[in-house]
Length: 342
Ligand code: ADP
Ligand code: MG
Image 1: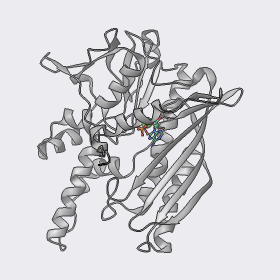
Image 2: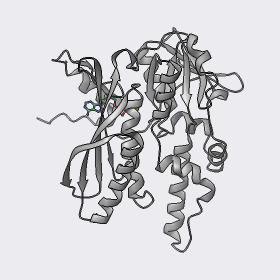
Image 3: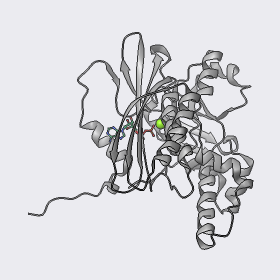
């Protein structure tokens, strides 16, 4: 008899995660939040422990022909810290696992750890362990981060209510546009190695791709202003996908306004140069590692003058209606493209 074979692409990444999740039940009452948020939430007494893990693989996630190892080390830590920020928590420790092929020298590993060290210093986290193995080809780096949040300050994806204001930090789409710049320069270089890469003009965009920062600064600002978001997620896959995660988990609908989406001027102009719609880059580009959160309207006054928090729309009570209002006033359904790994 022929064995049944189902392609993972039929489910997609989120379908696969849902399937795994539905097959497991928690056996410990300390497991407060398992699969399905930016980090797991573990009850350890007075506070919650937060755990999240992210793996970066040479090929699908990075290309060492234009990603310096130092930046890669920094980014691998930052993307993990970003998931702790998304829970309104503070990161404290990381463990780092490496798969290395013999293509990598000691100097290469040193460069990678220089970046890791610099991120540890910046985010005040301690490297407390890991694992090292050989890899048949390419580099694999997997980091797990541990953090903490006070119980009443832990923020999940599922707490938004109708009328809550949707906030996005920083600017969106630049990391995706930066990646297009790097890819183009790589092609130019491959066809003519004499050519020096022309990336000065695109420095900000390339920096957004190569060296993203986790927005811990926003977490400290929110605390100082006495605001606890009602729901939060970090923007790793693109604004649209993350909005839909908040909406689905909170059982509310989304309404955002195109003219409120923060896009950097160079990112806007460069997207056009690359024949990419800047809004599409912001909605579906990914890797911005900004924070997306909702607040109770009564907290608006406390945040309205924050230079790096943008109010892009609000939640409403129909979870089946997720829309973007374009600059012309047309209603466009929000769709998640995100990254397709499979
Ligand atoms: P993020 O983008 O915030 O890192 P992901 O989309 O990677 O989150 O994951 C969503 C949720 O699914 C998280 O809670 C994560 O821990 C969980 N998850 C992802 N892959 C697996 C897996 N293979 N087994 C169990 N849980 C997983
Ligand atoms: Mg996340």
